[in-house]
Image (cartoon, rainbow, N blue to C red):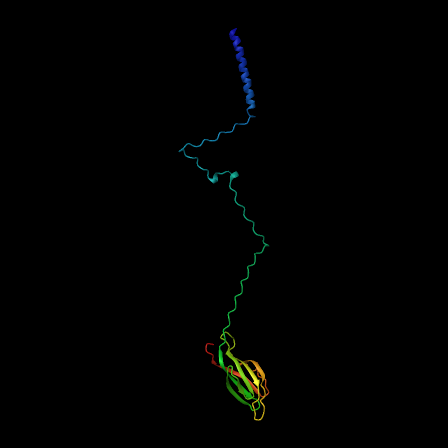
Length: 206
């Protein structure tokens, strides 16, 4: 009787434990898994794990190449360059100057021709004319024409005759004379003609 009385409670306990185990097995998937413990640091002196080369990375974590910049639109023109300032022209050479001029006069009535010298700034009489050369120069080396040029002032004043009053002088010409072109700026007078032949005696330092 004692043995049978002990067996019944033991069987009941075993059946209860089996039922509890089935219930726990069914409820186990629904419970959240406990977080994994962090890996323990390597022991001092132990070799560290080798790094994986970039080529072993999976396609999901491959590096992304930078995007290329889009080309500029074709209709956008390049900004024009600022024009360079023009270079100043070279300074012209100075003309050589002289302190005397060779002049030639003609009397239209007597057909007499006379060539004479007139110093710059000194009045000279030729029959009924009084002329004063203000400047006499030749063209510079950078000029296309080789010429002699003089600035002359001419006054008309008849010669003083005995018993007659002296007439006041009257200016009939003022301007540049060109030796190569006597008719370019001629002296207009009914009796006399006058023109430049050449410049003479260069001015020191000119």
